[in-house]
Length: 253
Length: 317
Image 1: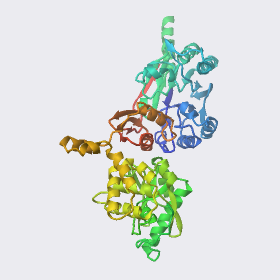
Image 2: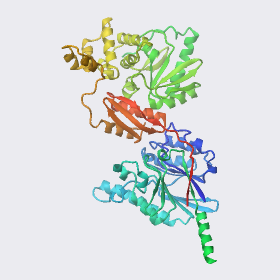
Image 3: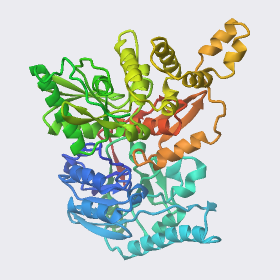
Image 4: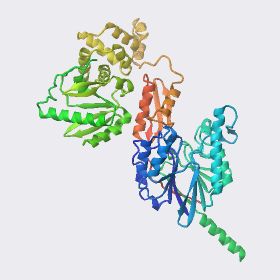
């Protein structure tokens, strides 16, 4: 069994010191690692990243993050990642990391993602160069996501995004802005590459729970949605495995 | 306005211990702010003294931008002040050697330390040190807006500034939008006291406050007319794109950068609602709205949320 703490959209600015730290003191009793689903800062400045780094400095479990759109605003994303790395935060961008939790291996694929819309009402790589560039960006990210998932040989496979892969977790947002909140191309990549759970943020007015068309659970952990410092999720494959083995043995008898 | 040497006011005279302590604290506080490059200007007694009214003061009133409130408090702390978040809407305080420093980030009548005010703030000589004070025009408006039964000295501060300072009348009229009736009353009163106020200024202000109403009402008072004359002036042409303009500003301004604010226009009032994570962000949103739409008043109904401990664990198999 693995236990995941996750939150997105903490939007740290220079006045946010302490807004996370207070809840992380005994995190090891609740979770094996902490995921941050993008929009770590408000305007993407190094100054803000420093405030967040200080809050995360003494976090007792590994912290894995992706950047969000806000983190790109000041064109300081490279320095921002370096600042977070100094505080031992792993920042993923179209790549993955593997954690060893007890005797289980956990692979986490992370990327910001991008918009484009969902099946039946989405943009395509057609027309003006700006439109083609927009959708191509999403497509390239989705391709990376799928290939990373296909290469992971871990016991658990987790996807960490900022943008949403499905419309279910956007319920409450205005339909008109769905194409700016995510893309079904990520769901397709996840369903093809295989994953146990997906986390994302970005949609402040959405809901927590959704599902890819292929049935992978999706959780929108944007802080305004979960309304807590983070949420904790338990994945239990051993139990399932154990259960399967029992029935198998039962069949033999 | 030329800065002029200031006659020493009684309570802050060098000779007395109190005066020395006052100056020490004032200089320590200005140093703390200047070190952090926090834009500020003095308002209140020190500004009145600096702009021409020799009077005593026990108040040290800094006027700053809302987004600098927290940094200012930190800066004062580093310089040995005890600090207090007195009222998140407009006032923080610093204390040292039994002296008090007011950190004001919103003055009566929704007046902010905006970019125009910052540009016009000038250093004046105060006991051998350069201290930044707001422009005489801005001080007059601030004093007009804050004048009340319990603070009649503000009215006299404003009159003193009117009689001593060289004023940019155009700027004064432009800045009068936060308290136009008060300013008109003050100018008429000042003129009656032989303070030189050009008639054209009074006429222009009168016209902008009452406009056509004045003409129709001169034909005879009715109760209906009396009622409308008291209503705040609704801008003649409502900008159809105003809310979109403000929404875009809130989304892109470095101080706010958020899409979580909902705006509604009710008459000449902009109602802001939604939920944000810090009180500073809430104040900054109000400041941005004010800058975009200074003819409107802001009804800030944004709530500030605190994260809480998670209560449940979701099990997925």
